[in-house]
Amino acid sequence: QTVVTQEPSFSVSPGGTVTLTCGLSSGSVSTSYYPSWYQQTPGQAPRTLIDSTNTRSSGVPDRFSGSILENKAALTITGAQADDECDYYCVLYIGSGIYVFGTGTKVTVL
Amino acid sequence: EVQLLESGGGLVQPGGSLRLSCAASGFTFSRSGMSWVRQAPGKGLEYVSVITSSGGATYYADSVKGRFTISRDNSKNTLYLQMNSLRTEDTAVYYCAKGPRNWTFDYWGQGTLVTVSS
Picture 1: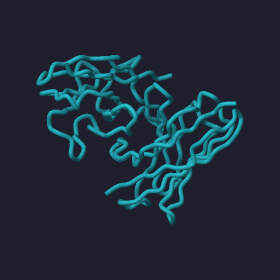
Picture 2: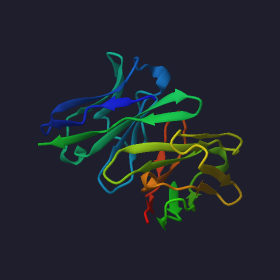
Picture 3: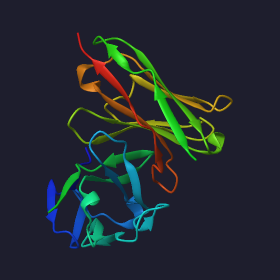
Picture 4: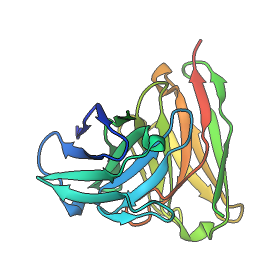
């Protein structure tokens, strides 16, 4: 069973920078997994931030960026704002029409 | 504007069945793959199923394979999820999502709650 791991939580100061990662229980993440990232406020539907590793979705501020860092997919928030405080999920495509969501990271801005 | 409106959730007993619907608008439905993703109370998001634009191919998470069936009616711009042999662990908010497009779920509905309990 494929497990996609994310940090359970992260804290960042307003205006600060934080990098969230998305890794595989066994193996490295590459662009071939087409990592995407989603933001979710509790009680709300997810919002798509990044597709195919590093393409920002329509309307997403440029303080959000995606990349591959040290064999993991990464989401960097530069200049964090109060309304960035929510949950973040990555998704990896593992083939044969199957996608796996990461465990999610709760970001606190304080 | 893309809109996805789920319906059909509710309370069902273990072993029972339920059919979810997702009415789509604001894009060419017949050209888009569609998906279901769920979220158990207090838990993370979980991939459930994907269907291609024509309905010719479907894919399922192992946790629902053989029990759930995804389908679509392109003449009605509607996506479905037939859920049989429901278990308590199927309790979740079920989201309809447009895509995958570029391997991404690019728009999401607001979700419908399914509760499996006796």
